[in-house]
Image (cartoon, rainbow, N blue to C red; front, side, top):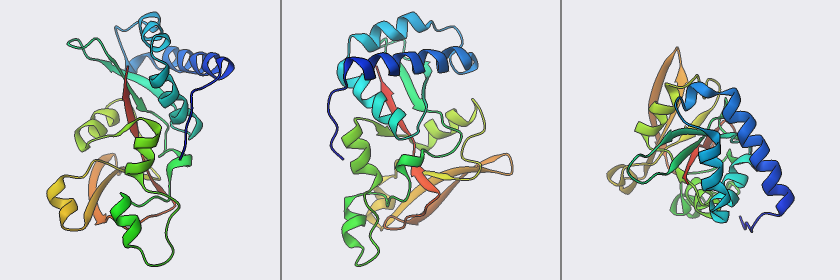
Amino acid sequence: MKTKNITKEQREELLRALKARFEKNMNRHQGLAWANAQAKLEANAEKLRSLNEMEKTGGEPDVVGHDKKTGEFIFYDCSAESPKGRRSLCYDREALESRKEFKPEDNAIDMAAAMGVELLTEEQYRELQKLGDFDKKTSSWVKTPSNIRKLGGAVFCDRRYDTVFLYHNGAESYYAARGFRGLVRV
């Protein structure tokens, strides 16, 4: 997945969408002001490009926190279900190359890197779930601990029965309802 800088029009459209989402979902970022987040965004074209990729692939990024030490605003994909433009992916390049037939188009780790985002960890995924009900019909790959990955596995999460579950699968597996959620620090 090749991405490039966004145009002035795309930038303005993205900022409008982010502001509207921020204002509509104040429970996700109580005590934070959009003007401060926007100032950070306008000073960082690379992060805007990443957020634009999140938006284009259906992630509906929104501010979910503010790091007081670094001053960074933290954006997560907040779409109700795993982003549509990032599904049917195996976990990483090694898993993709291990498939002999019926290979998916891409993998979550490489796609996230191309977008300039990080996969959520299990802990971050659980924090997101405190802000709403996400992945009630889909699931999302999360960063897999290296000891699990070395053994050929990968982990993903979803929400069922009003509970957040962590599961395992072979890293080469992929499903139409499994994608990944990303985060960007600005």
